[in-house]
Image (cartoon, rainbow, N blue to C red; front, side, top):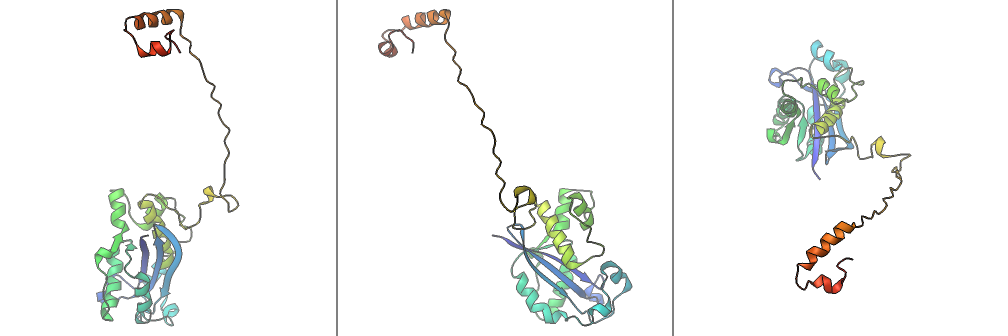
Length: 233
């Protein structure tokens, strides 16, 4: 079955070429468009200061991140988790730009755009002219946003996986049966009463019998007259 990875990052800013870095990566595995429960999540020491504007978005301070691993220390595990699977990303160009910048700096292969599925593009195609940010899409699909007080890579990747599955035609968030389809962890079997349909008879009238007999008399030696001398069953 198809394996896909819902992915999100948090960063110190908007452009890796201006010295900004990844500070958090969150990945959620989906198989056959269903979340499996397997995730990859890591905080990363950017080895630089944290701009106040960025901290206001994701709440990650330089103090919190200073003892976290550098990207080069988690790169191998990250690459192994992704493998060759398509990455589902909201505004893929942004996250891919940062990831490829870090991979390239380590001399590792970068990911092609063709390995990504951009949910912004999917949403704009499905709902042209409507807001395509993650919050707006979650509200559209009645996905719970109560935990999203700030941006967080793992939480956003989980929300994104639900949005993506809705954009694909409907979600079942995990491999368990939905609450509507189970009762006490067992399938609910609903018995329905049988509807009795009585047979009905429609006897031919005297006029119909006479007309039928007249019709048969005009046919020479019909086989059914040999089987049914009276011409009726």
